[in-house]
Length: 414
Image 1 (cartoon, rainbow, N blue to C red):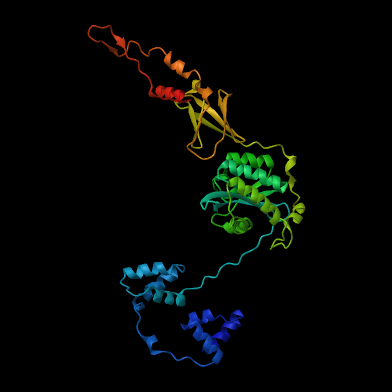
Image 2 (image 1 turned 90 degrees about the horizontal axis):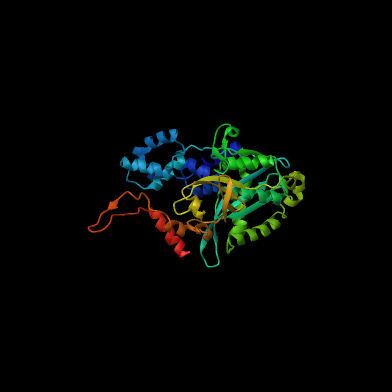
């Protein structure tokens, strides 16, 4: 029996698969291998004909498998338990291995790009180790040139829009040029609303500004198909295993210093797929020179209302504004890590852009003269809320906004 099945299998697939024969016959793999080597027919134990606790539920299992061939053993076990099955899951697993239809995996097609045709881009996330034994999360912006396999990575504390756009600029500078196409996942920094075809999607205005400035075409991966950008996916795995794993870093700045040294080393090693050195293949990319483009200034504009206590909120941090603009709407421009505040198109103040959240940046000059202004302020509605005390002239009760007292405390503590 085993010889016949093995011969038939060899004629069909070109080889003998012991595991497949084991599933087909119900015998252990060691048993199959033993009788194939000795050509002695196995003796079937009478215990195999004993009824199984699973027998009443086999029709249900077969019916479900026909409709849902990938349904897991755990799901089957939960279902038949509700129907009264009190056996073990191992019996169910053995039975499923015998009857579950095989779903052949589709072969993969390796897509090689022409020189200068495409860059693939994505983010990675990692918990890096610090010398004190703690761990901290960091995000890595990664790009890889499709033809030469030149790799680039830089790290930041967030995946925000500014880090994303600035990552492009430094990657272009490192590669020395701009490709024709950049392939992205469906990142929020790239696409606001995905449509079909992907070129009809609604792209982020700030990203469109960068894309149009450098004249490359943006393409989006198919949804739920990470292998569409397999080169950068493999690069991310390589960065985690070859660079991040087993190293300690003091800060994000320390990671980026070491990452630059690491890139210069790995990009001068023979690549496992091309069997050539990425730096040697880079000139063949014929990228459009990065230096031939005007300097790109990252800028993002918001509108904010100044609070009663003379602050605006941006990225979960507070920035002071001259008190004369309290309760007014102002324009806030973020450019090159600086926050500029405009009122009526006139710049009224600026601050360095801070990282993190719940921070308060204050300039004392923004509150200069506020205390005197509050103290000199005339009574509001002098004829309102008169209070007449016996034997005295009536006097007015001044109504003040509680925010004024907050401002007094703020100025007193400065």
